[in-house]
Length: 374
Figure 1 (tube, helix red, strand yellow):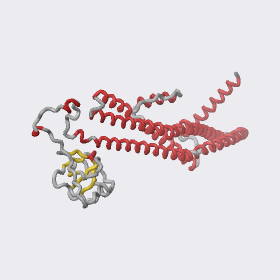
Figure 2 (cartoon, one colour; figure 1 turned 120 degrees about the horizontal axis):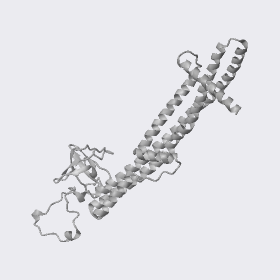
Figure 3 (cartoon, one colour; figure 1 turned 90 degrees about the vertical axis):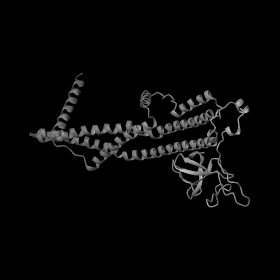
Figure 4 (cartoon, one colour; figure 1 turned 30 degrees about the vertical axis):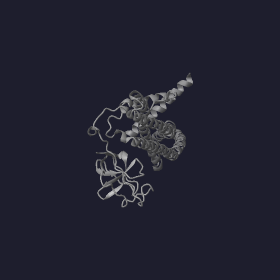
């Protein structure tokens, strides 16, 4: 009991001495032991690393999970050391709705077929997003979080100890200056030597930890490369999925041009009403350049020479460009959204492409980038 009381009294005395020293330093009434410039630079670098790591971590979490409620839920599961329940991605949920809508409207109708195709692509996009989030969480977020919750806490703890050792050292220096009697000076000098040794030892421990920030940067650099690689793979997958979908939809674009009755029942199709030729609607088609004997079909051979391509004598069509398109090579024609161009087809051409002309310029253009006009 007496030992505990003495320890409490001693701790209270140390706390009071440190508080007095700190207050007097703030008021400019006491001297303060300054750390060397190298040590101060290490401290500033460590603080900067901690602050920016926190910001990058939080914003990456927002990027991967924009829903704040979902982030809070994941945080609570993590703190409770429980597995986060699997959550359906937005793409997968959209795919589910599209598939259900297709079944309701009729999976054999043009709209139903397209809903199914787009829904399947959305499902693949959602799965790719899930894989990217998982990879980024393990390879990027976890190392950043481990630094903040592990290494940084250790550094902060040792810095607090160093601050206390410095306050003790400066308080001893102040007592030595105030000591008058020889015996009091000797005791103060002995105490000063002990506190100086403890301060130097703690300063070395803290310095080694602060210098370890360089290794932290190297580790975070490696993790950043892995994050970029995961993100690159994710966007590459998404791009490829959308290209495939665009090609699939392009093959059926003719189904929706000037044919509002394409969803009519088979019975109606086999038993059309008797109408005169004048009332039958005509569906505009892409004019095809006839094949001339002795003239090489440059498009079938995979090479397009704009000088050798001749438009049909009549029947070319106008088209409005829906999106900007950058030509991949000299055989293609670059497009700007909302401009008007002339288009036609050639024998043996890929059905997803047409020949486009703008003034003296001509080249291949993708059908899916165009709105064909009558």
